[in-house]
Image 1 (cartoon, rainbow, N blue to C red):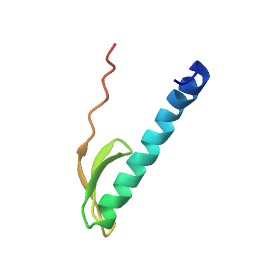
Image 2 (image 1 turned 30 degrees about the vertical axis):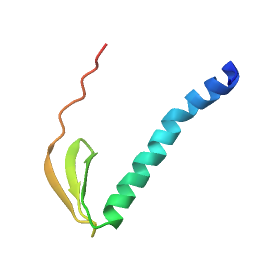
Image 3 (image 1 turned 45 degrees about the vertical axis):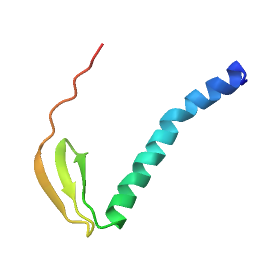
Image 4 (image 1 turned 90 degrees about the vertical axis):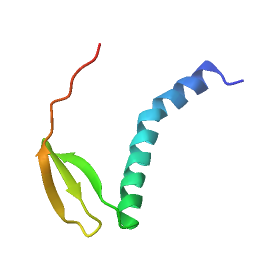
Length: 66
């Protein structure tokens, strides 16, 4: 059984681990010759494995859910 301090530490690591996993998945997809879609400067952009960026459309604003 883990202590409350250990659980608190692990919970604080979740955002960092999620960011690392996202970056790895992005790079893995590009390395495999696939394309990825991301938001850059408020625009939805398709990025191919060779680095070419294609503007798809303006990104829709985020909605806060309470």
